[in-house]
Length: 174
Image (tube, rainbow, N blue to C red; front, side):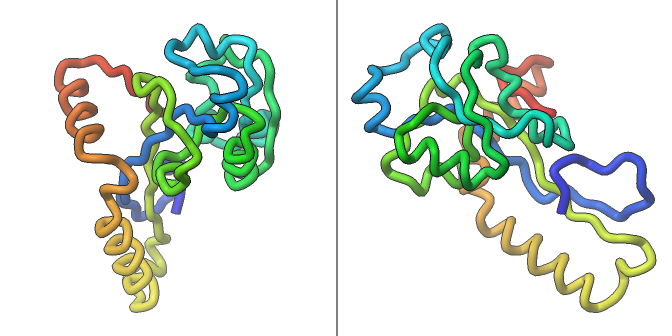
């Protein structure tokens, strides 16, 4: 599985799904620091982000959406560490919606600030037709299809499709 559509290798690939990321804070953070109702209110706040020097893909650079507002950063080497820092109420973060929606203490901020990324499944042409590779593809593809609503809600998918038809988007995609 990859985050970007591979461009340089000879691979057989198919897109699994889009997924979204949004800005989140814990309820305890918002009680302590106050509500956030506009992007300008993010300026000067502490953000948990990825480690910029370790970003091997543009798809992982989801913090660039709010670049100028993110003057204070706490960089974490894993998505799990980022999620836990936000859940603990230390800071604000851009988190995967499908993971954050499972945590009741997290509140999505600024619904208009959202990034769309996608997952791809790949295999090498030399092994693609083998039974075990085909079974893995079927299992992963079926599991993702069954859970599609948790990756991108229907309203987000409809909005993204409508915006794509009109040639503009508030959603940023790598």
